[in-house]
Image (cartoon, each protein chain N blue to C red):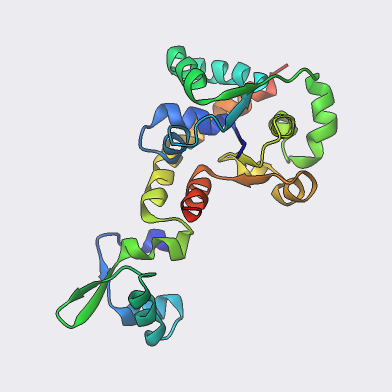
Length: 140
Length: 89
């Protein structure tokens, strides 16, 4: 199971150890989670803005997340994947999920993704962290 | 609707039947099958609000609470991400 994790979930897991994002990323399916080189860049900047120690982010990435390198230009990504999002700046998340062959995108920002189109065209399901946790429970 | 329920409160099978638009017998069936967690006190059942979480939210109560925990910080997190994303690349 390959899961691409949006930045709001990564940051949420750094802010609370009892939230759904933390439970998901620290759970037993670690190693299935991916972020992209673009995500890493934005995560570092968001941590700085929110006064989250960079060590915490680095440790989480090292232990629980895998990285997919994106070598395309952001402009090309927006052209190709812009049709899957309501906010064009989120297009790189969809692009990275496709690149790492993800079955899921996990995000709290569900309203900005065209989830039906993503599921129909790309076979990727967009879920909130708690929904994925509930789904994983149903598989037990 | 679940947020309107008082998580400390308990409900009778009749109240739950009314809330879920089910017959009283169906509620008793759900209790007997273990799909609805209830406590038998003497001869009657009482159903804690927590047991109704999945039916209203699609989430077990602990996951519903965990999501609420994240949501507390979400506004500032998403604002920061939007601002950074605008200037990315």
